Length: 99
Image (cartoon, rainbow, N blue to C red; front, side, top):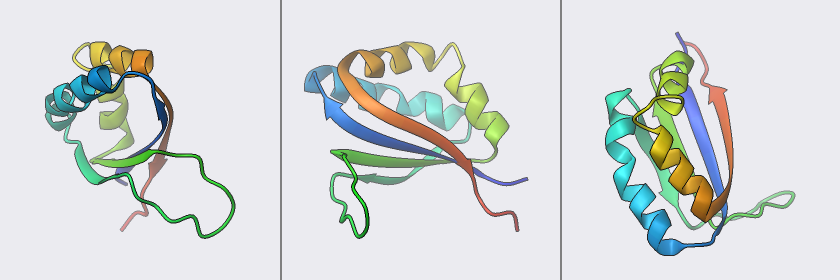
């Protein structure tokens, strides 16, 4: 089973206080489903093309199924709605290479 990677590109934060509340608050829900942070950073160097971002986050989950269970869970839903209310983001899900 391949690991799943959630890549979040935070384009614009409209309300920093609410966004910080989201950042701190949603972590326990992520961990409950086996998720962990691999990248949290506000620095990136564009080497080719264009990239509009203020912050990049990469999270790893044991599987696509566990990611989707977390993303659609009752525990995460209020946090996701909070993030959506205070920031513009792009979110993608991809699988890792199988061993």
